[in-house]
Amino acid sequence: MNYNLIREKEHEEDLKRISILRYIDDDFMSICFDGFIEGAELVLNTILDRSDLSVISVKTQVHISSFDNRSIWLDVLAVDRDNKIYNIEIQRSDSGASFKRARYHSSALDSKYLMKGKNFSELPETYVIFITENDVIGEDKPIYFVERIIIDSDKSFDDGEHIIYVNGAYKDDGTELGRLMHDFFCTNPDDMNFDVLAKRARYYKEDEKGVMTMCKVLEDMRNEVREKAMAKGREEGLILAYLQNEISQSAVMRILNITDDKFNDLVAGYNQ
Image (tube, rainbow, N blue to C red; front, side):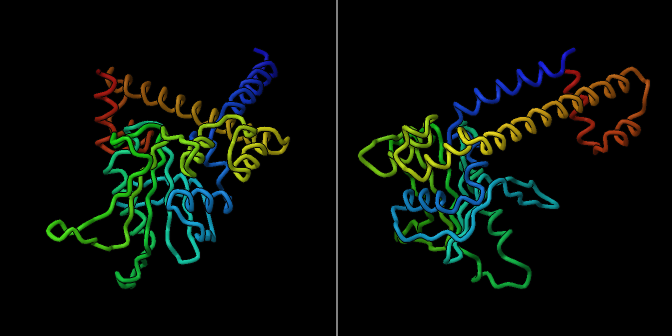
């Protein structure tokens, strides 16, 4: 097997893939927006119809861990000068933008930003923003603002939590939001409306250093997939050995470092 030829072919495939990446692709968004304060300000000001919002930090792929409950990864996490927190999520799949997922992200932000001993009044104002490829709410609107209200009086229940869905299918060039969504779906930086987004995309698509960074990311992703595939193969082999009475359940659990529930799931999955 000629590994040099394989690596060369993979590199060519990476270059082709990079050329068609868009901001709506979460991998590309995560690379481009890490530390990209100017871009985060553009996106947030456009979505919130403001011009004065000032971002002081922006990170991508932020992990919020939980000892007892499900941990999550945030696509983009930004903080403004007023200490308001913004989580921007890119979702091409409708199922990935469920209402309860937005609720969970909002609660995760609360748990992250209220330290022990602090008063509830110190909870920061939070925004969970889903930018979706399709109109997941289905009311044919460019943007949906989700807020709590007191039903009997129709007054706002102002608890500082905001959830927003941006309809990526809306690309009306007559509005700033439509122009922004157009750029999120562009593969060619020359076709983008906003210079700040075009410049950033051009760096990772055309500049030698930027392309090298993207290629490294794609290579790491390939290696991760291979490792997962190898791990899955190892799991299946051990479960088969268990079913054939060649190894005990406790030995399988010890080798794979898994719980009883995970073990039962693997056995059930193998038997399907």
